[in-house]
Image (cartoon, rainbow, N blue to C red):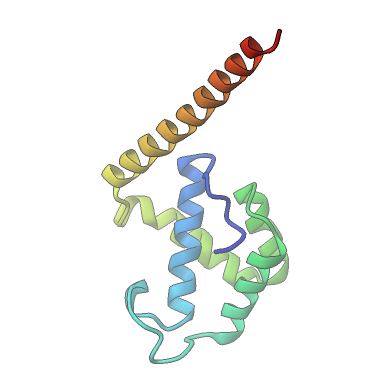
Length: 127
C-alpha cells in the first residue's frame, strides 16, 4: 500500500487500511490473506482497480478515499466497507493495536521533544 501514510491518524483509519489489505489479499487469490498467490487473481479486474485507486488517491481521509472508490467501482467499495465493519468484531487484535499505538505515540513524542531540544540548543549557542 504505497499511498498509505506511515503514521495512521486514528484507530478508525487503521481499520480501513486493514480492510483494504484483506480485500487485496482476497482479490489476489491469497488463502485467507496470508498465503501466496499461486492460484492467480480471484478477480484481476477488481484487483487492478484497487491498486490503481491506491496509486491515484492518497488515503488521508479514509471515508473520502472510499467515497472516491465508490464512484469507480461500487461493489469493490462496498466489499471494503463490509470488511471494515466486520474486522473489529470478528478478528481485530485489540492488544496489538494498543501496542502499536503506544509505540507510535512514543516515537512521535520523542521526535517532537528532540526537535524542541535542538531548537533550544541552537538558540542558546547564538550570541
